[in-house]
Length: 325
Ligand SMILES: [Zn+2]
Image 1 (cartoon, helix red, strand yellow):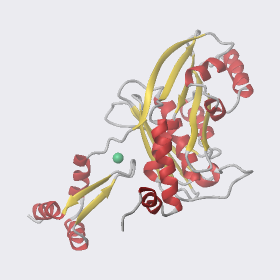
Image 2: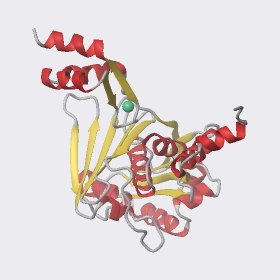
Image 3: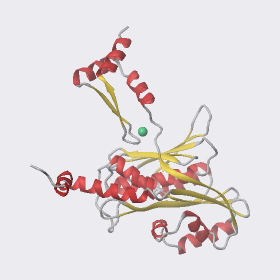
Image 4: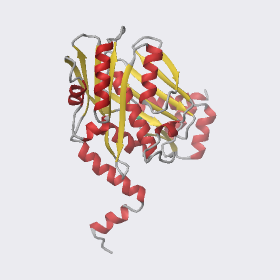
C-alpha cells in the first residue's frame, strides 16, 4: 500500500522520546546559525578580570549527544560553562577538567574545556532524576551534597596539576568559587545558569566570572559585587538577548575596563578511531575472545561525546592472533 509522507513521519515519531529528539533537532538547526562565545575584559587597574560566556548551542549539543534528562542537563550545562570560564584564564594549548563527584543519583559530572574553546563532557547517570525543589531543578540534589570537586589542569608540563576541594553547595558555580578561593587563593565571583524549556531543550546557558589577582582590589570588587546583585540572573540576561560582551559591560558599568579577547566555543571531542584502536589493543586476549564469541564485532562508545566506533570481527581476530604470539 502506498504510504503518504505525513503518515510515514507520524510512524517514525512513535514514542515520546522520539518526539523530544525531533524537537531537539529542530531547535538545533535554529541554534546552528548562532555561535557560542567567550569574552574577556580587564579593569583599567590591571588586577581584575571579567569573563562571560554563552554556551547555549554547545549545551544543547551535549544534551542531544547524551540524551540527558533535565537534572543532568542542568548539572552538565553549568559544569561545561564553568570549565569554559576557567579555561578562559589559561594560556594557549592549555586545558582544564572538572569532575564533580558527589553521592547523588547523577554519579560523576565531568566537563572539560581547552583554552581554544573546545569543550566536552558527560554525566555518568544521564537519565537520573530528583524531585523539583521549590519548583526548580535540584542540581545539588542530583550531584549529592557529600563529595569532591576535582580540578585538573594540563598546562603542557609532563605532570598535570590536580587540586580538589570538598563540595561546598553542590550547585556547581559555588563549588568552583570555593575551589578558586581555597586552592588557588583567588577569590572570585562566579554565576552559572541553564534555562530549560518544558520540552527538555536548552533556552539559554552560560555564565560569568569576576576574579581579582592578589592582593585583591577591595574597592573594585565591592562595586562589582553590587552590580552582580542588581542584575538579573545570567540566564535571564542571555534570554533577554544580551551577548557576553554586553553582560560584562553591564557588570562593569562603574569600573573602567578594556576588552582583552574573545573566543568562539563549540562542543568538540578529541576522540578518534586511532585512539579507540589503542583501547581495543589494551584488552586482554580473553576479553577479545569473549567479544568474538559474543558478536560479529565490537562497538566502543566514547563517554565524552557518545560517538560509536565499530571494529569488525576480522580486525578483532587479527588483534587476538597478534596477542597470542
Ligand atoms: Zn569522543
